[in-house]
Amino acid sequence: MTTQQKISDSPIDFAEQIIQDVKNSKEDGVLKCVQCGMCTSTCPAARHSDYNPREIIERVLDGDESIIEDDNIWNCFYCYTCHSVCPVGNSVCEVNQILKQFAIAHEIGYEKLYEYMGFADSYFTAAIGAIPEIFFEDIDRDVPGWWDFRQHLDEIRDELELDPPLMPPNDVIDEVSTILTITGFKDKIERIRDSQEVEQ
Amino acid sequence: MKQVPEKDILLFRSCLVSVEYPGVEASTKFVFDKLGIDYSISEKQTCCTGLGHYSDVFSQLDTSAIGARNFKIARELGRPNLVMMCATCYAINKKSVKLLNKKDDLREEINQLFDENGLSHLKYEKDDLKPTENIFHVVDILYGKKDEIKDHIKYDLSDYTIATHHGCHYCKVHYEDTIGGVRDPNIIDELIEECGCKTIGWYDHKRATCGTGFRQRYSNPDLSFTATADKMNAIADEDVDILVHLCPNCHIQFDRYQHLIGEREERKFRAIHLNIAQFIALAMGGDLDKVIGQKAHTVPIDSVIKELKEVEK
Image (cartoon, rainbow over all chains, first blue to last red; front, side):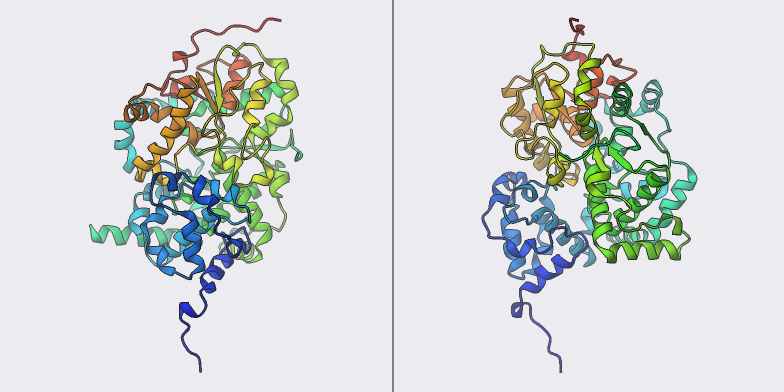
C-alpha cells in the first residue's frame, strides 16, 4: 500500500526537483547553501525591493513549495551576481529561473508572461527577437527621439553597409517555426494568450 | 588564459545590436578587418532567444533547440567558433553548449524531435562544440590580438575621462571563462589601454548590473531605474566623459534612459556611451556615421567628442 507523502516528511524533495531540472548547472549546489547571505548582500533586487535570495534557498530547503506563488521571485534581475560570488557554488539566480518555470507549469504568472507575447510572436513568425510593441508607447514617452530613430533604422543600416539584411529568409523562418512548434512553445504561447484574453 | 581563435569565426548577429545600435556590428567588422580576423556573418543564424528566455517565455528546451540549429549552421560553414557582440547571446549559447554536451536527456529529446519532424540535419552530437573552446565574446577575440591594436590607432582619446562597465552576462555567468577578472573586471580597461588611453579603473558599483534586469526595465521600471541610478551617480561622481561597455542591453539602459534617470535623480548626467568595438573603431579612424553609427545614439556622441586629434607619430 502506498501512502501519500507529505512535504514535511521529506522537505529535501523540493530541492531534489530543482537539482534534477534541465536548467540546473550547479549539480547539488542548492544543498550546500550555508545561509551566509553573500547573495543577498550583493543583490540589486534585494537592495531595492523585498526580494531576498538567501531566503529563497532557505524556503526551498524547508520544502516550502508555496514560494512559486510569491510575487517577489519576479524581481530577480538575472544579473548572476549571486551566482558569481556564492562560496559553495550554488546559484540562486538559476534556482529562481527554475522556480519560475515550475510556476509557469502550474499556470502561475501567466499575466507576467503576457506582456512578452510580442517577443514570442516575433521569434515565431519572423525568426528574430524584438522588444514587444506593447512597450513602444512607454519607450517613446521615456526616450527622446527613439521613435524617430526607429523610423530611420533602414537608412542608418544602409549607411553602415550591413549585410546580410535584418530579416532572415523564409526558409529559415519556416525551420524556426517548426522547431518552436515541436518543442511545445507554440501551444504554451496560445495557452498563455487564451488565459489572459478570456479574463480581459 | 583560455586559447582565443582568430579564424574560422562566425560573428553571431544580435537582435538588439541589429535594431538598436547597428554601429556596434559595423564597428566590430571594422576592427576585425584591421586586425586580420577571419570571420563571416550568416543570414541562416537566428538570434539567441535571450530576451524571451530571460523573460521566462522561452523554456530551456526551446532555447537549446534553437541553439542546436545555430551550432549546426556554424559547423556546416566550417566556422565552429561563435563570437558574440552581445553578452546575453554569449551566456545563452555557452550554457546551451554545456547542457547539450552534459545532459544526455536534453540532447536526446531535441534530437528525437528533430528526427520525427524532418529536421534530422540539425541534430547535435555530444561535444560537437565545446563551451570554452568554441564560444566567445568579441572582447575575447580583441584581447587575443591586443598587442596589435596600437599599430592601427589614428586618434588620441586620452584626454577624456573614461570608465568601463562590464556586462554581467559576460563576466558573471560563466565566470570560469572570463578574461580580466570577475569581481574586479578589467578586460575592457585593458583593451582601452591598448588605444593609448587610461581609464579611471575601479569606481563604486563598477561590477554592478546596468539595471536592465530583462523584464524589470519594462514591467518594473522603478526597480530597474533605481538600480541604474546607483551606477549613474557613481559615474557622475567621477565626472566621466565616456562609459564603455560590451553589451547592447546595457547600452540601451545607459544611453536611452540617461535623460529619464537624470530627471528622477534631479542630477544632470552627461557621459556618452560606447561599445568597446565602437571605441576602438573610433580610435582607429572609423567614420562616426559610416562605422560608429552615431545616429542610433540617444546621447549624442558629439556632445562630448567635439573634435578628433590625431596621435603624434
